[in-house]
Image (cartoon, rainbow, N blue to C red):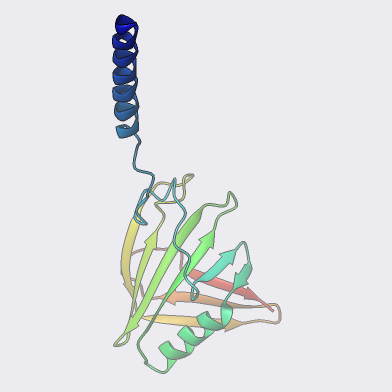
Length: 153
């Protein structure tokens, strides 16, 4: 009986150590907000202007930015453009002292070459037609697609 108790005691000790070792090997499940944009969703902001293939969310905020630029008032926005595949391209615009600072971040678009472009532009123009309002940047330091946003009427 004493031998049997010793064997059981050894089995319990071994099982205890296996339990401790396996419990220590659990990976950290928390994720930082600045992780790889290919895998983790971006933090959506209430003031984001979302362009989902011509369906514009929060266009009032973009129009406010345009008016602030025309009135020489400092302002900043983030335009999030969704590609046909559902990937994201971020446009960060900041207006200060007659200069529009633009950053285009395509790092979360898995179908395009990942880039982070920064440039300065002189003006934001608005052209109205019967069917839409077209906003474009002019006088930029680097060659970019100047068509920033098209809002259908």
